[in-house]
Image 1 (cartoon, helix red, strand yellow):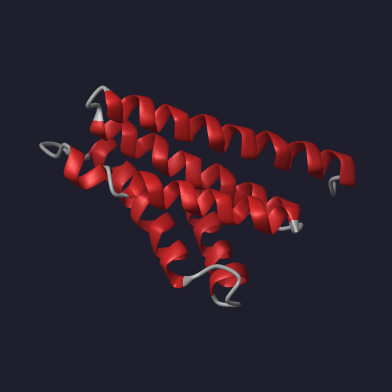
Image 2 (cartoon, one colour):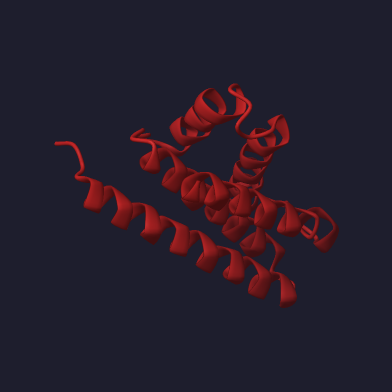
Length: 132
């Protein structure tokens, strides 16, 4: 069953809020030196914003990979988002997965810190697109 405009708007607002919350959590984790958790939260911050963008346009992805693919298809390939934005989302997903599941790998400050402002900028771009 398709979403009503009101339902879609509520979900988009909720996911953008979750995105901002996850970004704050990432910064909190980074400030305590919890780099794997910071990478995890950065990914989810970008993911929630991406899913909000897709929903705002009437797209529905069923998986994380589907979300990344649809962002590439509908926003990166069309030039609405830069190639770097699509690469960022994929890189953050890889960092989250590696940090959560790979043995003997721990992210460091040098690995994670550069992605904090990049993720912040990515979320801002998405908010601007949704609000346009």
